Length: 455
Image (cartoon, rainbow, N blue to C red; front, side, top):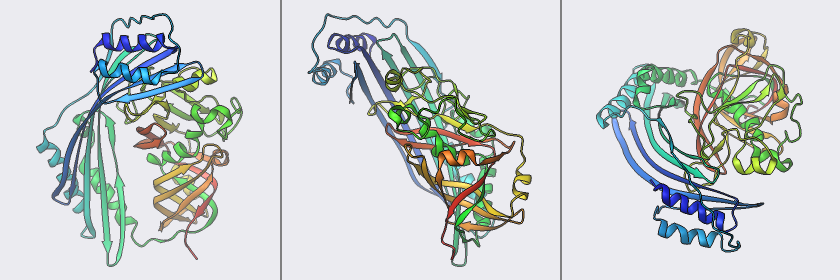
């Protein structure tokens, strides 16, 4: 990492050459990834990435540069080039004081133990049925150290360790195939895998793949839709979460601009983003600007209560910081991003929610989605879905797509269950790919457009 005196001189230079705020972000990251197909280890790789990002605010102007070199003698010329149009001012002196450190690391596991875990998962999944044609398990480990200092006196470092197990099961019956996946992960070391049974997770994944065989083409039209608990929360992450990031809300670039304090959703909906949940995949003690993470209530019983801010957009909009400035690595400037976003549990029951539907769709898993934050228009591809007919789950459905607008869907939530669960994944946006948690209990939407290929 960088020496304190070097960081202070870089910050001094920024203030002495027209900047009114400056930040140094230093990162060292090690990544390991192992993949096993059946009993064969097909890949085990590791990599080390490190560098520094420097950001300067000067009135309404914004400057950012990055380098893989920590050498002050090379960084200062880069700063000179960055700020060459700014007039020099009197010398400024930044004294950072004592550094504050947070350790979110955990247990290491030798290669043999990691390979053994992958092998056990694949064998457990394959044991479910002869119709399970293949199992693929992937283990990802990230060990990241970040150091953040700025001219407002923040001088903090954090050691973050994350691990995730991705399991995919393939079922084949004659010429028909189906697949399912699970991806549990945590802000944790390898001790995470002592907290649940990875083998049981693999078996559940295999059973889900089996249940999707015999699928029918997805129906088309508007109908009630129930979205399962857990990573079904990705639906609301995309459908409305991005529209509640300050980078979208400012300048009217969100469907929710100027609606603070207004009823924008059903009273059943409380949407929260919380970056401080212990051990959760999207958690950290501080964000990537050095601001402490916190619990942010975005929608409370349908009323818009808040948004997520980063330092630059908070400055532009005269808003408080929410600990939401995030980035993939030092090559990106941070922007407002979600951490662990979820619909709070309600008092309804899943069985009754389904029983009350004559014809609709139950979505057990969502594969991917996209949204236009300005209009709120979204679409999602489902990876697991079933018809609801006369109040019961019947046939699996192939290739259903959920289509709509976030503001409309929020108002159409008419039931929220009590079976809350978090899921884990990644979000890809302006500041790169970041770890996110997305969760919810089962949620029913009274009417939603479903796209499919049924004739």
